[in-house]
Figure: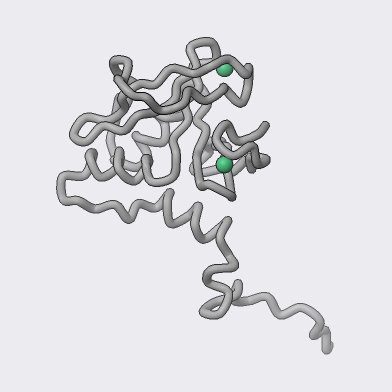
Length: 147
Ligand SMILES: [Zn+2]
Ligand SMILES: [Zn+2]
């Protein structure tokens, strides 16, 4: 499956038993039908119905669904500070661009806390180059086999 934004190959990542498709290039995320609600529940710590709302008025280019390649709808997502998500009517999947997940999560946390586990998880997993100097997977002592 390829990124609807930059056409890079999406990577499947598993986060708390939810499979997400992540673009390592533009850091967008694809949620299959129902996955957004699962992730939102994980992040907010309680049952959470985070569903796309009315169609958004925007001049943004419509993206094509990575699964069925139909043009997706632009819909508002989130309560406090909604983002424009791309939603496929056929697959019921949902695409969030880089930063949009943070914005939705920030709206769910009135304290303004955006450093959620999932975002840190994704960054640490897929952006190792950025933190290569500071820490490189401790405990990886290969090559020393002295019995
Ligand atoms: Zn991309
Ligand atoms: Zn689709």
